[in-house]
Length: 247
Image (cartoon, rainbow, N blue to C red):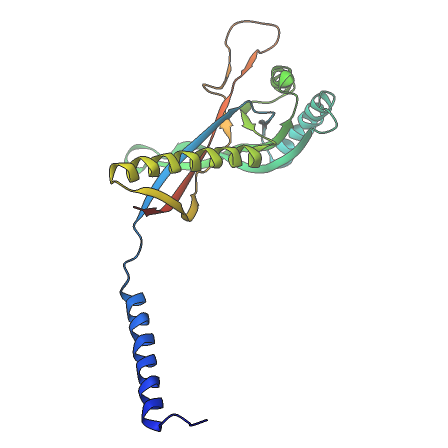
């Protein structure tokens, strides 16, 4: 068998390299597929299944020790009364405790030598308790009992959802469906079709604790127990999606 001449072998290798190089160049110059980027928001509604209440107990006396002792007695009765109303999965705990001086503006001296100063009038002790409730039907009873046993200020109810993560996932899935529908509409308007989802990210939407308001409000009508109305809340999620388009 005769071997090929060296010149022919070199020619074939050169042609092969040129063809391969041309293919790579064609790949580099090939246009990127068209894409569309959209944002959409999904929303689901659910009733809260737990709530937080914050009770402030304050006492005032001439000395810090007397204010603290009075607050301890008041807190003891408060704790006993509210613990009797709580279930095994509910909780009551101290959130903050402070003792601080109470100042009064006093005028000293006479005539042009009068000077106004701040002097300690007494001391105030403040004990703040957080109550976590799962049986929302007892919120009114808890509010009334807290006030009856020394609470001078009440904040809340603040609503929470034990299934918040699941609800957020449902809202995100709705947001993605909306994003795809929007991408389809834009693609059709441009004479194209959506080929596939290329990129997807979620956008932060904080879900703050919700206080009594449109969804849950304290009613002012006179009654033996403070009535509380619980309504649905909105849980939202937002996504940003990039879709690849095709003719």
